[in-house]
Length: 160
Image (tube, rainbow, N blue to C red):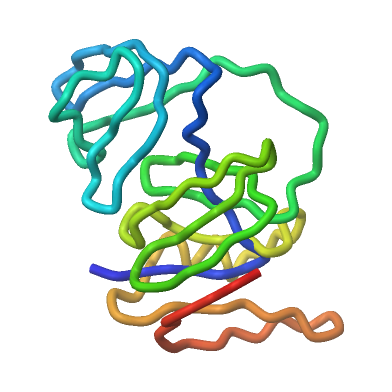
C-alpha cells in the first residue's frame, strides 16, 4: 500500500552520537546506537545485532535533549518517528535527507508517512488525510492565500 502526504514536510533521524532504545514487536528491548536503516529495511548500528529489521520493531527511542531550532522540513515515519531535516530529495523510491546536524541518510519510500514543507502549518484536512490514506495516490496540500487546495496524483521525484 502506498500513501504519502506532502504538507510543509516531516522525517526521522538515525544519527550516531546518542543512546537508542529499540523494542521489537515481541517486546524484546535492544540498546545501541542506530546508524542506518537501509532501503530494504535493515537496521544497523553499534550494539544492534545483525538481522534487526525495521518491520520487526515496535519503537525506536533516542535519548536526546531538545534543541530550540526550527526545522526547515519535518519527515514523519510510520511508527510515529520524526526527523528534522534541512534538505530532502525523492528519487527511485528512496528519500535522501540531510538532517539538521548535517548527517545524510537514505530512507525507503515505505518508511515515510508524510513530509511537512511548512512544519508550523496545521489543518484539519491534513490530519484527516493521514487518518484515511489513499493506497495508490499521493496528496499535496498547497496554501494559496488563505485557502488550502489538495492535489492528488503520484509523485515520482522531489528535491527541496
